[in-house]
Amino acid sequence: MLSEKDKGINFFNSCLEKIDLHLGEEEIKKLLLYHDLVIEKNKIMNLTTVTDFDEFIIKHFIDSLIINKVVKIRDEKIIDVGTGAGFPGIPIKIAFPDTRMVLLDSLKKRINFLEEVIIQCKLKKIKGVHGRAEEYGKDPNYRESFDLCLSRAVANLSTLSEYCIPFVKKGGRFISYKASNIEEELIDAKNAISSLGAEIEEVKNLRLPESDIERTFIIIRKVKETPIKYPRKAGKPSKEPLK
Image (cartoon, rainbow, N blue to C red; front, side):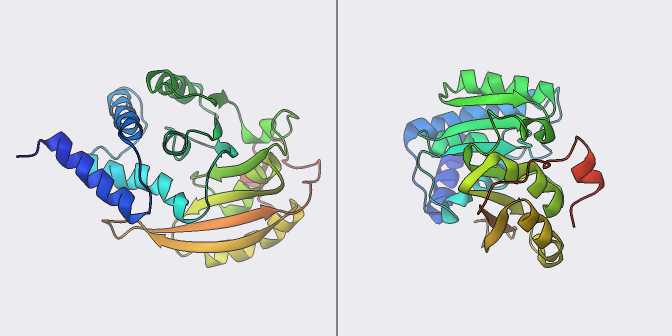
């Protein structure tokens, strides 16, 4: 008879198969350790409301990794803006170890936790950065230096675009993880995206396996440099989204 842990691993592998992703034993082990670290830290710090194992696998790991069906990831330089508890950045880093990953979050204690995860999971070419996107988007060490910017953060697309597009180099992409029904948001953000030097390349709708959760990915390609005035000063993109 299978143990609960083995049943969990089988369920995880079954979900991975449904998103066309095969991970080795070492990667699975690191992801399970990461799960344990999140659940343990969650007792003293608000990281997630999802604590059921199967639900965690779907809503955090599979949701992060289903990007495999949106874009092929190999050795890109990636920034995860508003990473929170490390999603989608850490699962992507574990699944695709050749990537170079930056995890950006405005809350220091979350970054402290992520640095602990990086050490415990023995991850290389990844770092946590504490700060606001509006500030780091102006920093020459970060501005227009990433192949890919990802964000699962909850904000309207105009605001997210101002946070994220300045990080992306010309020819690179910003991919926003969104819920379904975002047609109006897309229309509202079109001019903002253009003003930031980018254009909507594709909108892809997917369903997370073993669930009824719909996920929409908005793929935005950087076609020219972002004007130096963007991002505006801290707080402005969220209070006064670009039109």
